[in-house]
Length: 134
Image: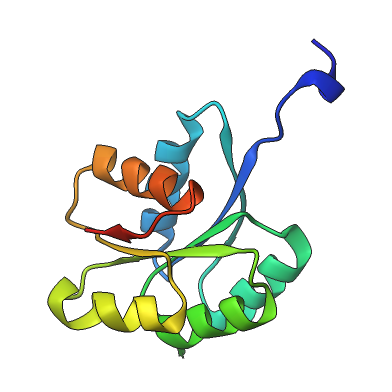
């Protein structure tokens, strides 16, 4: 099959200040045939540079980042690159932070405690244009 006949892969940026979390997400996404990780970042500056360079379809963003705030990053991504969707992945209480993440521009919020199948379900739901409440 030629490249022109292939469907373009969905590009995902991972933003978390813990390398082990990013690696686990990368491993999970690698199982998906139509999704690829196009970049990683551990803070706001790195994430904004990666969004500008790689133009991901989706950024999976942690709420708490090294020297920066995930909600602020979500706002910046939404303002600078409105075509890039964001999914907030966090260990913090959904009842407190999910609405804030949505107001900041995220398309969804999912707990790090959720099963991996739920995470990929959230990714696909957000990519299909729907909001994802966990």
